[in-house]
Image 1 (cartoon, rainbow, N blue to C red):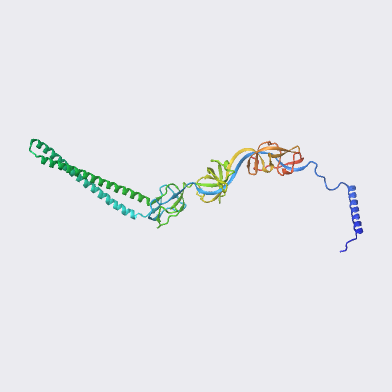
Image 2: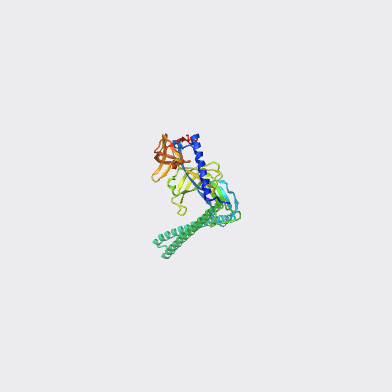
Length: 403
């Protein structure tokens, strides 16, 4: 490529400049320049009026469904074989209903032995009572003989030796009566022991039937036919959700925990549900986890067979609700001094300080500073300043704003 010399290049530039100047003069003679000057009235901006609406501020929480109260059913006696099972996972059970049955052959044998021991104790008591009656009769006879001998001794008919002998007979008879009474007491004590053993056996026989402590739904079954039940086993035979009641064990950020209160309404949507389930805050944790900075809240849910413990769920806690003036959140700006909005009046932008309240569905409550007749810049207010001239275009109200 051959570059032109310097004088030739300068000549070309001068000819181009003369052509542009000639064209500009021609256009000026023909009429005004095609490019229009900026609108002297200012920029066109979207504006909205604050609307009165029902504002509901919510907090999103997540967690898992858990039984409100879980009952663990284990064996009350150990060392017996499990022979029958009457409940499965998911079954609804009533208080006192038999869930499983243990073998009772050994206890039946012990009960038969106890019955024999009870009969033996009864016979022994009868025998000891008869023996005591006999001893009492002998004691009475010996006492009478002493009294007669004493009378005869006064008249000199009986000797002192005879009197001493008969007094010794009274003492022997009294000792035999005391021994008979002790033997009878021992026999009666044996009978009481046999009866206590029978009561224990009756209780053990009752406990061979594993029963539900309360109404509920069976969550898990670890019982296996043929296994030997032990009280030291790590897993209970059955786990039951008392009354089938289920709670959402929700995690709550520590900054939101002070705004949670017992009794607040919660819309809970478990995984797989198309519609939320109404719930109520039942309990709030007394501490916050140091690692996660999360607290916990128990949200009570109504009985529903479709609610499965362990299911993930999310809930919207209703923190507050009231009617108030609201605008889109984009219309409110914040700085070091607080919140403010840009109000358009007679085509001029004016900054106004406002007090904000609830936030819900992309809108924010204005508690003071503006009225329902004011026009507020809806968005892009950060590009405007106090005193700017604009052309306001009111945004049409949406269906959600008209209430």
